[in-house]
Length: 193
Ligand code: FES
Image 1 (cartoon, protein in one colour):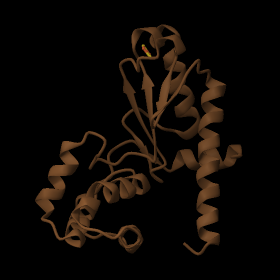
Image 2 (cartoon, rainbow, N blue to C red; image 1 turned 90 degrees about the horizontal axis):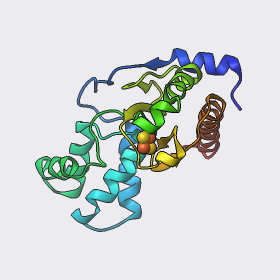
Image 3 (cartoon, protein in one colour; image 1 turned 90 degrees about the vertical axis):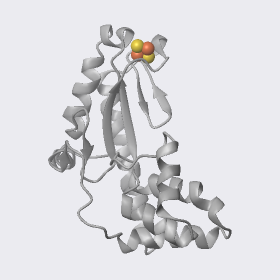
Image 4 (cartoon, helix red, strand yellow; image 1 turned 60 degrees about the vertical axis):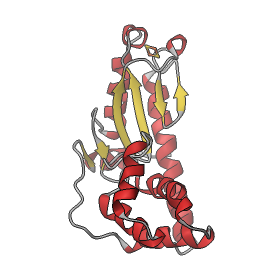
């Protein structure tokens, strides 16, 4: 569980604008991820969508140089790969967090104090609407009705709906996700990743 100090430090690492790709380079870790996935899944260009999924799951989005590197490895043109990325709405070339928070501001949620959900997110991890944390763990959007009005106020975390949210419930949820990410990272480091 995160301490108050840890949360304050995490909040300080937040930026509320898109993160630009500084150059055309792809990190060695990302190349290793791509190569490991393709090594574990032999085949041809039909691996494009699964490998894009795997990389987006890890990075939170698909930077252009990464799409190009994947295309090269699959022996297809970058244009073909970009075409697939732009066709499917679940792919994004804009940075998002590993945990994508979508807070509903539709009428049912609004009247049940959806603003307090946004406030709790801001107070817990310092994130504003449209932002992404620097560690790319969380990003935040607001949406109009998740189709779960009976659960108002509600938000989605990736594909999961969380309802009847209170400030405390939101704080605990975010702290739990952050702790889970830390554990995963620690386990990866222990495995020498
Ligand atoms: S208004 Fe929020 S789920 Fe419908």
